[in-house]
Length: 340
Ligand code: ASP
Image (cartoon, protein in one colour):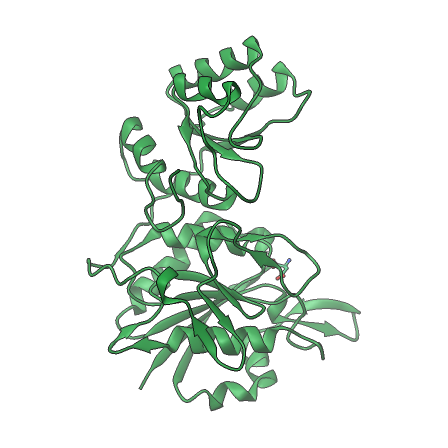
C-alpha cells in the first residue's frame, strides 16, 4: 500500500477564525483532519508529523529546514512521498533549500499551503492538500513519477527552486517564470514528463550544513557609496547576492566598481542575479556587465532570488574552496538554472 507522510509546519492553511478573539489562530493537525474527511477516501495510507508548534512561515529559519530534511531522512525508506504543509510567504525559500539539501532524491517532496485558512468556506486549502497528496503518491512503474522538491498551488505543480510567491491575494500565489510547470490539475492531473527530472539512481544523501553568512546588495539608481560599502563590509559575510538590472547590468561608476573589486579580492563571493523575474543574466552583453565578469563576479544566470540565497548557503556549508563554490554556483545542480 502506498504511504505518504504529511509534515505539518504551519501557515495560513492550518489556521481557523476564532469567534471569541476575532483573529486567525493556528490549529493542530487533528483539527485540519477533522475539516477534511475526504483525506480518508484517497485510497492510500498517510501519517502526520506535526512540526513543533505551527509556524507562520515568516519565522522560517535554516535550522527548521534541517529539521524537515532530517524528518525526511529518518522516514525515507518507509514512505513513497512527502507533503509539507507550509505558509506561502517563504515556501519558495524552503522548497529551494530542500532541493539542494536532498541530493539524489528519488521520491516526491511536495510543498503546499493556502491563501485562505482551512476553516473558511471558500478555502483553497482543501484542493491544494488533496492534489498534493495524490501527486506525492503517483508512481510510474515501481518508481515515483516526480522525484523532485516541488510546490503545488492552485492547480499547478512547479519545480520548487524555480518558484516565487508573486501575489499576496490571488489563489494563484506562485509562478515559475523561467521553467514550465511540471503538471496541471484539472479533471485529471496532467504530468509534463518532459520537464520532470529523471530518477538520478545515485544514493540519497541529506546535506545539513548551511552557512547563513551571506547578504544581499540590491542596486537602484541613486544608491550611495556608503550604502554599498556598508553592505559589502558586513562582518563575517562570505557571499553576496548582487541583484542587478535587466540582463545582469550595474553602474559603471568608478567607486562602485572599486567597492566590488575590493570585496572580491577580500575573498567574498559575489553572485549576479537579475531583479527581473523572467530571463537571465548575460554577462558581457552590455558594457555595464562586462566588467563584472572581469573582476571575478559569478553569474547566477536565470536563478530566482530564493534559489540563489539557498544555493549560496548550501555551497558555503560544504567546506569547498572559493573556486569550487563559484564553479558550482554556475552549474545546474537540481535544475535550478539554465545556462545561456
Ligand atoms: N503568513 C502566512 C505564512 O506564510 C501566509 C500563508 O500561509 O499564506 O505562514
